[in-house]
Amino acid sequence: MLRAVGLRRVEADACFPVASPACAALESATVRQIRGRLVAVGLATDEEIDRHPARVASGTMDLAAAPMISAWGYTP
Image 1 (cartoon, rainbow, N blue to C red):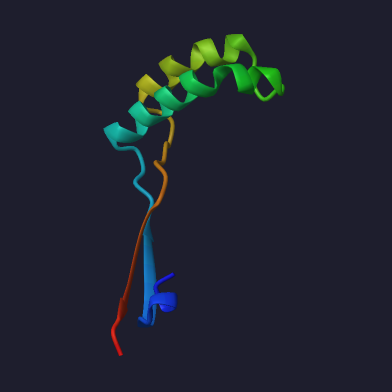
Image 2 (image 1 turned 180 degrees about the horizontal axis):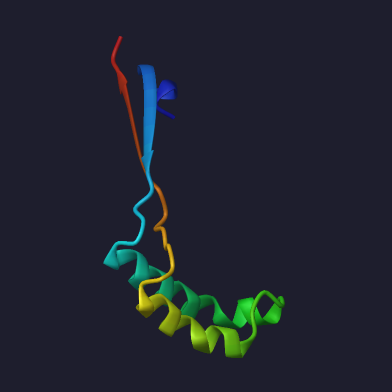
């Protein structure tokens, strides 16, 4: 997209935040929102999902938020 608007020397970088408080909050909210779908397709049971918040709160899981991707380019 940056090249399409005429930028040159386009580059990008990604950052994956791991184990920040925001990661735990996002993980918990995501699992609550998709719980029914996880169970429906057999990826998790209700019991596993019920145990998940305690595992997240324990701080023993390495959780990562979605990557933040920064991109830039230069005008010719």
